[in-house]
Image (cartoon, rainbow, N blue to C red; front, side, top):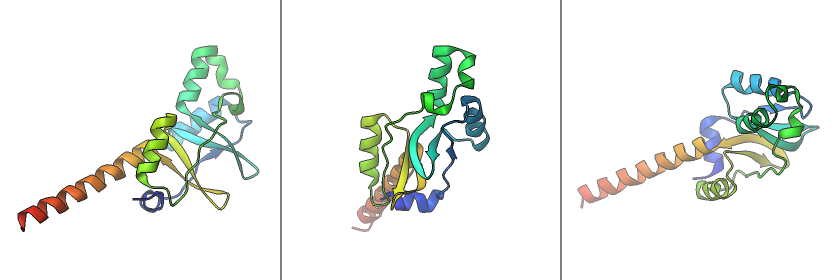
Length: 142
């Protein structure tokens, strides 16, 4: 299974935020959209990723005042992306090794989606169930 399959099933909406938005604004956006991360973009370019973990770390380090800091102060700047042709197995490896829970999907230098570890696990489980059922039917009909 590939990223293209996952995006087709979940949709390709991407939530983005300005690097100058405050962490409070970002927290409201994450809560309102019921998501765990946003892509930080400016002028069509990915500058970083901001996750709920990043916000929690900033508050733990600086207290509630951290919520007035701009997103670009605490975002993850080294963004790893994936493409439509990447396999679920490749994604699992990249996400596990890098400890990423979200990867932007890029096609022709444009962000066209975002894949979460939950999306990957959900589709991997569905794939495993289908394989198991096919084996069960094969054995039953042999």
